[in-house]
Length: 275
Image 1 (cartoon, rainbow, N blue to C red):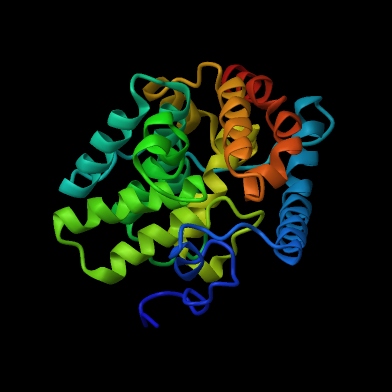
Image 2: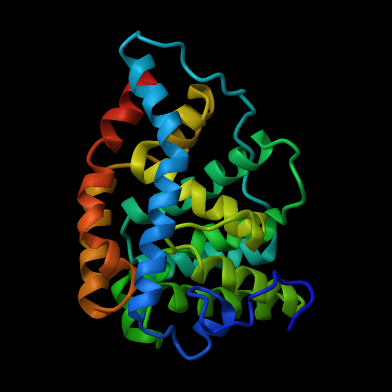
């Protein structure tokens, strides 16, 4: 067991851990599927009060949530981040919606972490590699080139290559890989580290339209840097393809939910950005 990693990282029965991913990502058992659904339900209930408040405030029936404007910070300028960007662009092959989503995921994760009280420690360089590569395993080139029973395993293997090439210590490589493989879980708690926790919250902010969590000024800067395009359509297509490839995966389990989850995203962000 690596003492730098959260407890349970060496347990292959816990979906998304390094031990689970070691053999390519084991197909989910019945009990693992049930656990994923229960986790997703808990995560939804945790977010429901904020969503209901936004719905009411958007209709003038309640005051909006007060979120600080913190300013969008640039990606860390390091060899590892530059390598992760190159990997993302290589496998995206010109695709923009999911690629831009990966960049925005970093910025939203960074903003969410800086909003949190107390902030706690977070490795921004690891976070950048994790968020840039968290969806790269769904691209056709990654599917063709990299073995794995789950798209997160392919992404984690690419993150491991990045870390090894720039000389990261093993515990940082393992931390980044696990933050990617656990990202598709129905719920990721703070137990798994700030990089995994905020790296899991941020894609939902972006793709589901949890706009109430980000100040409109910060959101405008993020979307100006990396526009959304037709993100909802791209996500549903990518999830459907992944579910077809791996019928006992997490995305196969959650596939029926994705059209519902992303259907209000574009409207919510438009309203938040434009008033």
